Amino acid sequence: MVCGVYLCWLGIQSATARRQADGTVSTEPRNPLLRGLAFGLSNPKAYPVAAAMFTALLARYASALDWSAFPPLLGAACVGFVAADTLLVMVIGAGMVRRFYRRHALWVTRVSGVLFIGFGLHALSTAGPGLWRRL
Image 1 (cartoon, one colour):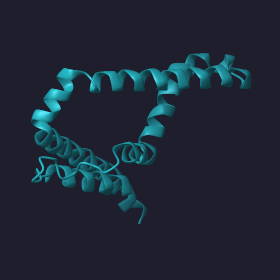
Image 2: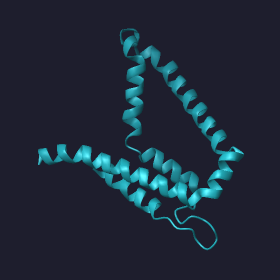
Image 3: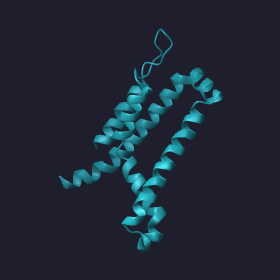
Image 4: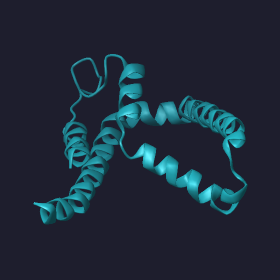
């Protein structure tokens, strides 16, 4: 429920963004790196999704896995993390993507906000009935 409310709040902030006098979008963070890290670390869905992916990928090898497999699996996960982030930085830093975003920043922010509201409402509609039954 907290995740759903948080996503809706983020979505409303983005969906109602305005362009300020200096041309920036009102939701632009003062320190994007710290905000991105905080958002990534506080994203409660990231951890179950990662665990589910590892389970799906390694389920057929479960009988062969023991603690000696942990270091190479952890290393592979770290290499994958760095490779994925490098790819994202390269794509986001591409001139075409930067130009598109600069030209349409306000609408990209607003559409992202609507998506966040949708994800938040989905989280609330999924968690709400189960919580209500427990009360």
